[in-house]
Image (cartoon, rainbow, N blue to C red; front, side):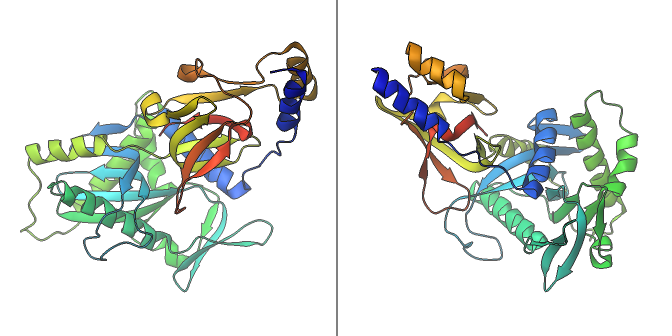
Length: 333
């Protein structure tokens, strides 16, 4: 690349506008990222096993027929499995005040603005439908009892009475006592143990029909193996902090496409290394250094400023290219 091309690349770098994440989304994502970083894919305690951040393909629901939106996947924050019960848990880290109007969860923030989160319980129940349908499609039996729960993690969230008294809502204070009883060295393990202990105690205290029979050891092992193989969403972190969730498909370079599903494994991170400051980008252009490159296991892949990442964002009908120069890092789910 001659000098004119180098300085054209510099102009492209400096023209990138940082995209900040919404404060509410960033807070929730921060809590999710902290838990994800401290937890392994699964964890066991007594008769329970827990899986986190698992992405389940949409298939026919057990009660609701074909789900809206066609194909795609749902991500379930926590899946807790015992021989008697399968529980899908959605974790929210909201602050402010939370109420329900006409079935929709409304969060009032400090500035007085209302955020409409839709019907969170209904959506999580739909995720549970998708999970049981996925298992049935693989000829696997789910435990006889199915449960959908929403965990509200932030201590500072004020709940309307309807939510405080709702049996499907887990407030932070309900978990704190269980957390205090855990002695594992890592917070992630203590958190998962606390969640499973809370659910096991609830299961033991619940009155269930005598005809409900727990799954046997062999069926539980097959169920665990199927859940182990599920992955989570991939993420693109943009310059400025905004994060996109979905499927990383391929890196589109001048030399051709690189399929990311083959190049990366679950949990791996690829940083996009680029001198973004005025002085650094000027010196890079002046001396002819490569203005953009990849780190990690993809460091040997040659990329240019004009290259893109083909990404299918969650909830979108079609994949779209994301300019590589706008990306800070790629995270494989």
